[in-house]
Each structure stands twice: as C-alpha cells, then as structure tokens.
Length: 167
Image 1 (cartoon, rainbow, N blue to C red):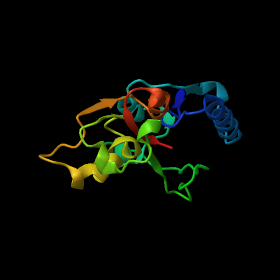
Image 2 (cartoon, rainbow, N blue to C red):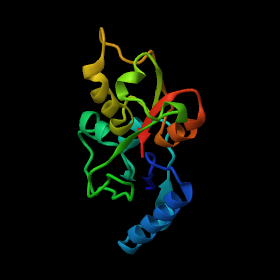
Image 3 (tube, rainbow, N blue to C red):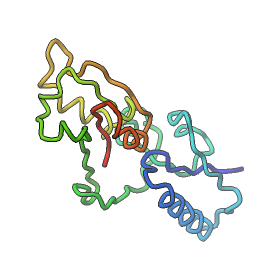
C-alpha cells in the first residue's frame, strides 16, 4: 500500500522543501520502507489529507493539531532559523506596506488584512489574540481575506492589504 508524505504548511522556498523531502525518503527507506511506495502529496484539503488512513508523515500548524486532529501523533517539531524561532517556539510577523511601517497595531483599526487561513495559529489566531483587546463592538479590521498559505501571504506582500503571516 502506498504511503503519503507531505510538507504542506511552510513551503516558502520550494527547493528547501524538495531537499527535505529527498532526505526524508532516504531516511525512511533506510528504516525499511520501500521508497517507491512513498507518494508526495500536495493536498488542497489539508484536513482530509491529515486524516487519510494511508498518511505516513505530514506537517501541520499548532491550531489544527490541537483543535481538529485528536487522532494524529506528533513525531517531531521543526527548528527554523528565523529570529524568534528558538527551540520549538515560533515567531509571527506583521508585514505591512512600507508607508505604514512605523504605525502601532491600534493604527490598523478598520483596515483590511490578509491572513493565511482560519485554521492557522501563526497566520490567523495569533493575530486575533493580539487585536482582541483593541476591538470595538467585536470588530477590529474592516475586512479579512484569506490567502490560503504562508507562502501566498508572503507573495501578496506588495499588494494593497496589510497582512499577517508566519516568518
């Protein structure tokens, strides 16, 4: 039976992801798994993907892990080299237009924001927590759009939106 492997969450620099996947294939085959039975998957529906019976290894954000995936097992945590990502900690960054760079978070009230997805801790729920005390009548931003991923949020960084994404 074929086994799925994927790294769908933080594929910001695809050559790095491909190199990591090649290393994973090699290490898994050294542990006795047939490399030909490993299928790389780029899922559109990540929640279904993470629950697939033939999934061997994938990557998820903390929010879906805690809130939506009670039957998965954590086998490791990535260690990123970005500032603020020491050990198992992560760091989220607000990315804004250059003209807005010196403003405070409160100055973004009634602006539009682009977030990764509503199942992303670092790309949505972290920001929600930051602006919650600043809300008026349960609202802070004028509009929230979802890009679909960290990479897509980064790609939109030259657009007309304030945005929040994992760095």
